[in-house]
Image 1: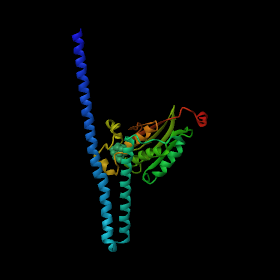
Image 2 (image 1 turned 60 degrees about the vertical axis):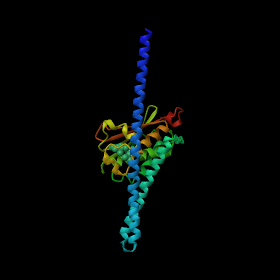
Image 3 (image 1 turned 30 degrees about the vertical axis):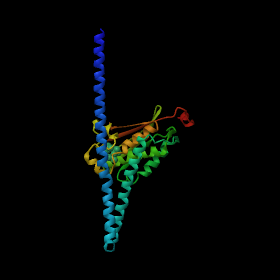
Image 4 (image 1 turned 120 degrees about the vertical axis):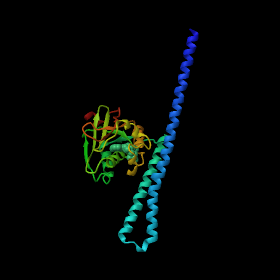
Amino acid sequence: LLDALADMGALALERVRLVEDLDRAERAAETDRLARALLTSISHDLRTPLASVLGAASTLRDLEGALPVESKAELLTTIIEESERLNRFIVNLLDMTRLEAGAVAPNLAPQDVAETIDTALRRTQKILAGHRVAVEIAPDLPTLRLDPVLFEQVLVNLLDNAAKYAPEGSTVTLRARQDGRTVRIEVLDEGFGLPEADVERVFDKFYRVRKSDRVRAGTGLGLAISRGFVEAMGGTVTAGNRRDRLGAAFTVMLPVPARTTPRDIAA
Ligand code: ADP
């Protein structure tokens, strides 16, 4: 019996080692993927806009006197827009680094969800100009404990993606309602949606569903950052597809604070 037990022990140990080896190999492969993705991203997302800025600025300097006013204005617009893109990328990288270092301390305070949604919609008005926007906010939403800056950024990222990945003229829907002890905020679009196998991976850093998505001026960090921000506020965010039609559905769930506010009781 002792021998049999010893054999079993040895076998179990061997299995643990195998699993550990597999874990290590998986982690190494993931680190490798991230290192490559970071390099690709830096070379593409930093160098492409920088090349445009340099090109436009050099043209302005060299041909200054010979250029018609409209061309000058166009070149200046390029410089500004591409610099904004560079800035977005750097802010994304910094946010990601802060999240990974555990340095994002949310400033939680009682917030009116509808108000923050309004601000996010105002901030994305330009980006969503080519889309129809449907806002369906339940009138009796409870006050939540949120960091308005983080929450607004999450909504801006989701709305920005809806604008990028769903065709012009289609409708982007923002819905918010209470569901038990959580408030459920959904951003729905009418684009191609997501392959079922990718609904978790879209939250990975630098992950893109289609190679061509890289061209759309994104950084591949928006959803990773959004998930980090939502989790820092005690919530969850998931990706999926709409049931009623073709299109992606992103759902943010935020907890209703245990201590009820007068508005909660009224609701
Ligand atoms: P990106 O900067 O590339 O948009 P994100 O982290 O925001 O990075 O999104 C990761 C990937 O998830 C995108 O590149 C795209 O492939 C996919 N994705 C995100 N939002 C949507 C959406 N609304 N519809 C379809 N695909 C989406």
